[in-house]
Structure formats: C-alpha cells, structure tokens
Image (cartoon, rainbow, N blue to C red):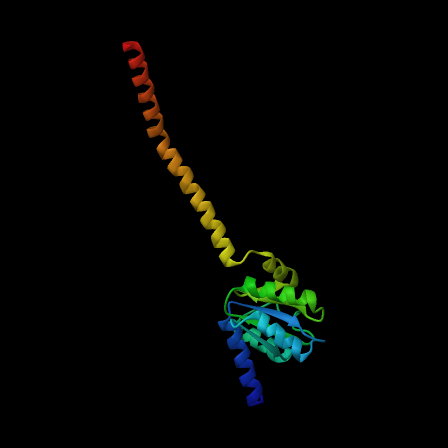
Length: 174
C-alpha cells in the first residue's frame, strides 16, 4: 500500500508537470546550497525549481501523460517547471551551467514532447519572444514602407510627366 505522503508528492509533481509550459530536468550533484539559491534567483519568479525523487517523478510523469523522460530521470534530479518563457529559462540554465560545471542539463519536456539535452541547448540559442516580435515588427514596417512607395510611384510619375509637358509647352510658346 502506498504511503499517503508519497501519494501526495506524486500528485504535486504531476500537477507541476501538467500546469507548466515546459520543464527542464537537470543534475545538480556538486552544487552547494548557495549555488542552488543563485540558480533559483537566476531562473526568476516564473519557474519552480524543485529537487525530485526519480521513482516518484517517473510515476508523476506517467500520470501527466508524458513519455520519453525515463532516461533523464537517472541520478540526482531537479526539475525547472516553467510557467513563463521556456527560451528564457533554457538560456538561464545554460548560462549558469557555463560558470557552474556541476549543473548538467539532462533533458526536458515542452508541449508534451520530450526534449533531449541538445534540444534544450537549441531552445536556449533561440531569440527571446520580445526580440522575435521586434524583428517581426521591423519586417512588417519595412514591407509597409515598400508598399507605400509602390502606391505613391504612379502619382509621382504622373506629376513629373505633367510637369515635363508644361515645361515643353512653355518652351514652345516662348
């Protein structure tokens, strides 16, 4: 018979998986408590970074309907449950891992699909949502200016033609 505290822990972890936009699994072996606090601060308030027991996490993952994380749930595991932008969290984890080699990104899940550590790295290489939107706005603005020039060209051409005809008539009359 399952112990009530373990059942509650599984339900809590399954709830975190279900409610989050993404989750990144890491190995934290060798990080001090101070480093873990720094990591939590670096991740921000939209992330719940929790140390989980692998056996309970495997059950919770199955309850949440996620497949493909069994290989990542080996050794000491902590999960960053993302409630905001997954790209920002992946970047924060990658940057923290560069200076603290004890943090290892093992994989993750996004939109119900399992991610490898390489996939999380690719996610970290993407531009943030704000940068992508700014680039899109720039492209749209450039397109609008090009359209405006195209629409104004016939009128400008007509004005030049009329002006040239007017000058020609004045030269003939003179």
